[in-house]
Image (tube, rainbow, N blue to C red):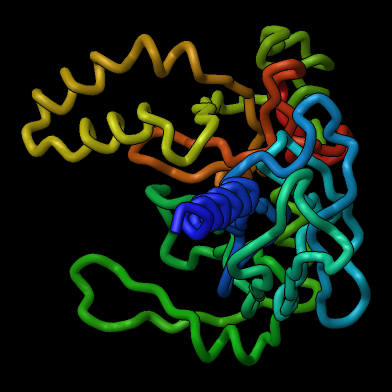
Length: 310
């Protein structure tokens, strides 16, 4: 009887040890249909690689329809693996992400779901000019920036305008050919206004305006984990119905928000939604774009017109 009890205790101990050493995938982003994909983030529920040496093999294998997407994987910490695409995936791309058969956590085994899928769906409107809230003319032209190529007839059949006080849709017409090229050229900033000001000895903009190009300052809030207590407190403050009480609740968090905020001066074509998720008036930076030892790294090309000025 004693021997049987000892064996049962030993068996239970081995089961607990195995469970403690097992690791699983806590979350994967993106999943399902997403308009734009620039990065994949895989989060494990426990440390799976040595924290002091993040130069470890990729745990996941990525496969997409057509040519293999250019990019590279890296470990952000012992729990988070990130794959950065060199270019955003085009519309209509379907991808699968599976755990590699030859990869295992540093200790124990990988358990739970290990295969995931996502797609970019059809082309989506990235931004529109004039911007929301602008004053428009009666015969206004609208410039739509899309995430991929579209068929003009498809746009014409699914696009319309609405105006306050008019209870019906206002039809649109797709501009093509030379008129389209002329409209796009007219919107480009060739520097003619600065040349004219210099030639006529007019007042020039100050150096900050010249360097930043009238850039908008955008603040990113850095939260290390999805379960960060600050996120919960912000959500609770934003949920307060009374606006004066809500303002006081947000003011109480101002000091901590300021300590964990990084700011950039963004040019016109920069879109914070590519790097962060909105939470009320705040932009919550996604994992992989900030490291405590090196700071903010959005990995923008210096020649890219969307490059930020820090």
